[in-house]
Image 1 (cartoon, helix red, strand yellow):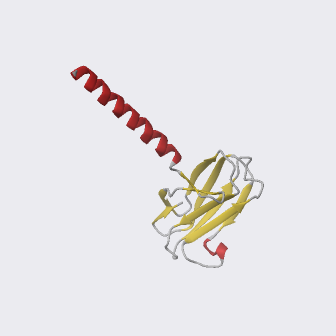
Image 2: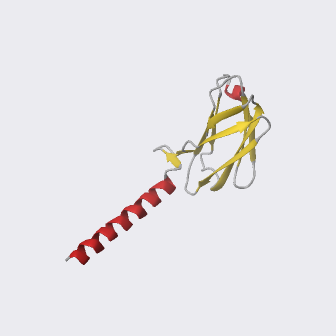
Image 3: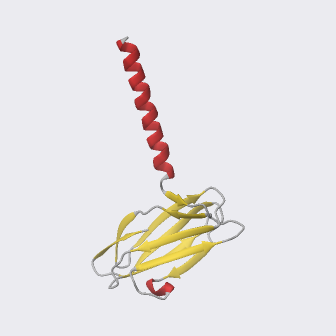
Length: 137
């Protein structure tokens, strides 16, 4: 009886670990009912002249890709480039690209026929940074 109980507990533990692993993989992407997908926030730091790369895999039909680079410190400036899976470049985007200087770059890439599936790359560049700047994308 003890062996059956232990085997059952081990089975439950394995199932819960597998469920947690599969939910972690999908938690990087955020989507809603109108076909918008974005990357769940990733935090990083950057210094003057440094370049950081981030990626996101788009594997299903999506009309809009939302990219939100946020550092909040208007005394520093970051630059953002976005690359499609076929290496089409979007940008550069600066803090003032949306008409406001607020330490944030928000970009939406739209295509009614669906954006290209595959790995999208985000290049964040420390354009004018004093010290080290924290950001999320």
